[in-house]
Length: 137
Ligand code: DQA
Image (cartoon, rainbow, N blue to C red; front, side, top):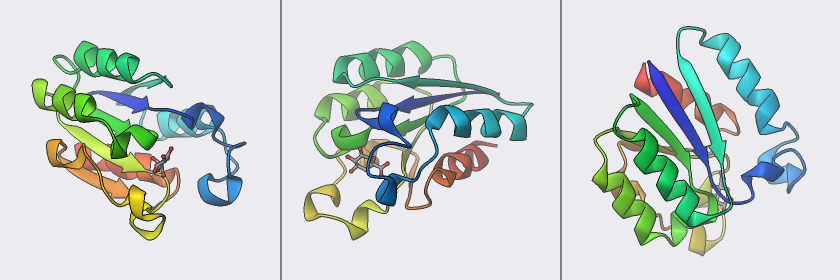
């Protein structure tokens, strides 16, 4: 089974960025743990701060991978183009968030991509990614 993780803007700063909201671990550390935990799953990870590069990665993996775990960061709340990219591919996408976006500012309560996704997992810290892997298994 092949799963692609895609992280959007500012998620390269995990561990440094607002640690009270996003925790102190870097994504690289967490990814190693995840790979050890699921040795039978081929887990790839990609991060970009650029909307078009996220769309390119969705198109590149969306016809061959078994699942995509997408944390689109702030683009979650703004991007019709990412919504359309998810609709354009056969691979199911799970939207994930580290924080509970429903419990934060009002502008984070709307997702423009959720309706195109298989489901949404939010609010469990980095464990949100593991829960998404479980949902694909
Ligand atoms: C986030 C939540 C978004 O609202 C925010 O813009 C992020 C991270 C999360 O994982 O909790 O960058 O997607």
